[in-house]
Length: 375
Ligand SMILES: Cc1cc2nc3c(=O)[nH]c(=O)nc-3n(C[C@H](O)[C@H](O)[C@H](O)COP(=O)(O)O)c2cc1C
Image (cartoon, rainbow, N blue to C red; front, top):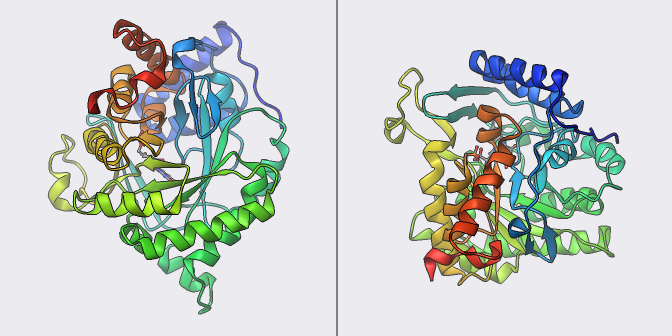
């Protein structure tokens, strides 16, 4: 696998960045395509930030900085390593299901709200088997990467499984055994609001056996260096559900938790959006979910007494947003919407601002800031 080499700003990458900037004002979906092509071909200028204060040890690994690429951007396995070369601390491929899924999908970019609204019955993806050649070809790279796997959407799975009953344990274990040798962490994605699993997250009798069967599968498939097990949570957990979820996560001994996915919108809670053009039903990402996600980070940090590493995701656009998540208990952060609205170099802006905030507040290392508002 060829990873792009980025250079200092020159005429061609300045022109490409300008072209991307104009395109993102006209069509965010074109902007996403240009980001993918631009990353693949090294067309963005290198503005990497290296500051020792941003380094952090999580799950037994050292991260040069805490900002990662969230799932959803790279389903083909050809973007994440370029993003890491540009300055991201880590990245995640996926989501993948056992078989290919191509559900109906409509994505709306709400510019005024800095939000993305997605109407979809599942995650479009080529199926977990199809990604393996790409994962093998990048395996020599030192980058820290995760693979995100999730259960088939009910409508699709009925066709795929042709009436055969497959338990969640079996389905996740089968996928995990395929990708375990090629990733540093494996995400069991419980966050999709359309899937029953997100509602079963409070039930330890569901969660614990799934994690156990995945652990057995990966210890057989990758015995020397099994990937860490991470669970991605839905954002819509109620205060009553949080302690139940935390108990299940602790009992299952997962290595970290991603908090969280998108917010499920019905007509009611969509009315707070400035953009009134759309019927506000679907799954929301971006700025409007920032506070919901930060509150859930804080809640989970408290209930797990800071013992479970938290990867925060939801509405981070600048260093202040990132600091809020860290102060609430997150050790790492993932971004998605900010990349589409501000371009892939947003990571370096966030890291520059975060460095300043940490140093101004007197922190010598990022680790000391984790959960500082909760103590
Ligand atoms: C268009 C789109 C596609 C996404 N696809 C996935 C996916 O395949 N798997 C997943 O776990 N999350 C997916 N997400 C959720 C993101 O990973 C992230 O959790 C969410 O966008 C919140 O972060 P943000 O506010 O920085 O965008 C997707 C989000 C969007 C907007």
